[in-house]
Image (cartoon, rainbow, N blue to C red):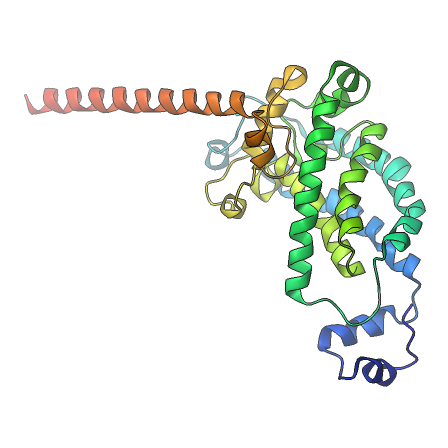
Length: 305
């Protein structure tokens, strides 16, 4: 709740007129408690979980050759009923674990100093903090993910998430309740180290989940690797094809643990299997292309004769 009775009082406290964005924020949040504003995360997470994967449902249902040629695992098909079942499982975990966790974790947000007042952060400040949050989450998530692939961690907890060997957007948050709680630590560590505004926190939570859905499904939230995906221009970004290898190998996977970027796997040598597979695939494609050109040349010679 803002400590100003009017916009004029807020402007006097800042020593300047409010920007358009600050005016909107004042009109919306002036009489709302910080706890109520924080709980917006529950709504945002529900919308992200429910809406973001929908393009996948449409594209997968169309089964069009135009899209299928970009499919990472072309032989894997999910029926509409299977996708609905996955969504129901995720929603059950959302209402039983994620939602209640958000409701009771507000004291930690207050403790680290995430603010709701004026002035609003600049765009550059928001961008810088989001970069820090992604880097911190990626590094800590990498090590927790590696732990979850030890024998005990996988059998007791992480195996649930690997039930989908070719994961879909709806399956991004599909996990054991303990894993959801554990992986909440890396997500909160960045904001705890560099606390910002509540708006930045909202953006972080939403973007992190959108990124997880993209990693588990591909650009436009499908299990496809489109060449025009904008995420291909993000340095060191793993993406759907990178994480697909991790799920494809499954329990025995000792590769591609990173949640967002690829630098941890490269530094600690846990991407060797993936790089070797890509090298073999490139070699096979070159050989097929070469044999195709030779056959084409022979055909042209026969025609000329």
